[in-house]
Amino acid sequence: MTHLRLHAAFPLQLLVLASAALILLPLGYVTALALSADLAVWQRLWATRIPELLTNTVALAGTVALLTLLLGVSTAWVVTRFDFHGRRLWEVALVLPLAMPTYVLAYVYNYLLGFGGPVEHLWQTVAGPQARIFSPQSFWGATLVMALDTFPFVYLLTRSALLSLNVSFEEVARTCGASHVRTMLRVTLPLLRPSIVAGTALVVLYVVSDFGAVSLLRYQTLTYAVFQQMTGRSDNTAASILSILLVVLALLFLLAERWFRRKSRFYQTTGRYRAPQRAKCGWSKTAAFTVFLAAILGAAFGIPFYLLVQWSLSPEAQAILDTRFVGFVWNSALLSGLAATAGVLIGLPLAYLASRKPTWLNLGCLQAAYAGYVLPGPVAALAVLVLCLKLTPFFYGTAIVLVVAYVLHFLPAGLQSLEPALQQVTPNLEEAARTLGLGVQATWRRVTLPLIRNGFIAAWVLMFLQTMKELPATLLLRPVGFDTLAIRVWLEASEEYYQLAAPSALLIVLVGLPALALLLSRDWRAA
Image 1 (cartoon, rainbow, N blue to C red):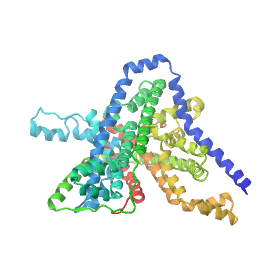
Image 2 (cartoon, rainbow, N blue to C red):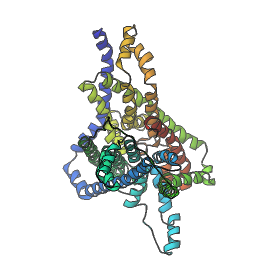
Image 3 (cartoon, rainbow, N blue to C red):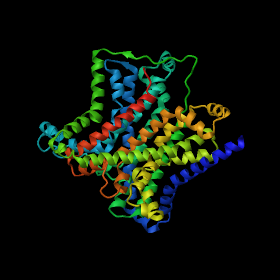
């Protein structure tokens, strides 16, 4: 029996090893290309670009992290600690900015805050005709856009931690004479620190890897520089050097977050656990909280969404809703469907063996698949491009290369759904099925797959929707004339044709809403 099991698992083991090798191969090749570059190339980049790019990237990530910390923690505190009219609606609505890609938000704010825009006109009526506001194409413009788009990461994790917090700790502090503010600073926030740090780390990794917003706002970061080296200079060697710096930077942030989380591990008491109670609010506090939450949500989602709808209904936008636009939708759906299907088919064996046979080899293969976490879009595109030109040049310029880059970049999103789904299915059920005479394949088809169906669907949908929004890899690797919705938004927004970009942007936002529904259905806790 054991021999038969080993014999049946051997092809699956080979498949997992091959998948892990193929996932790591592009990153390894780019690393080798960077390390084998001539010393003069490194010196030139260090003298001309690297210090500025590193400073800009770290400064942007740090400032956005601080701002999202303020927005995310404050909004989570309001909806979990106070009971006011409309609270449940705000609780869900604060997640909506996650459906708005950063490049869509960037192009909307380019219009709102740009030269001659509505905000500047409003400001000039107050401060005089010569008054100017800060340009969105600057550090502060990029910071504003990125913070508004990413604060829900901190909000979601902080809210979840607040809902499960044992208020007995706070009551003990209050009994000992601590004020409300001191209790919050010395007791509550330290207990929330692991969740807050995890959310902030997600924000930092997102900002470091972002291309869409910084490219439209013309703010020089490592990600934008990689794209410029590949397209403007056609210098893959310089691009690979900048890519390695970007990967190292992302890895440092990720390792720092894991270390800090281990140092900040707390356990809730079970014997005297008490759930937090919301304080009832009168009309004045209700009005204040409503204005506060409406201002944040309006800036992050409400106003941009309204403008997208308004522009999409304009005659200019209606004129482009023809067969070409249908082709853009089809191209996006086709590429996303292929990438999601390939990602699930590759991720399922990796997650299965890591769950059922957690040897160092299987766990190592699974961790290798998570390399996409530290591979921003331009880096993934560069890795696949240089490897394709070296080994399979006949595939260059085809959709196959693009799908490979998508899978490499977004496979971790699928594994985050597949792994927990498999871990929740006890191996005893599979053993019982085999005892009753079912073979390995029949057990997998009739027992395991039906039980993990929801996780399977969630992984596919998340990868599909992530791919629909992907911009840099599509820009760099798409076949000639093969435009997607994301490409159309970027091309039209780059030329400030706001109405022409609106239908594609609005459709991307609407398609992103099912991902939020999945997120809420899996991770939301009813209050």
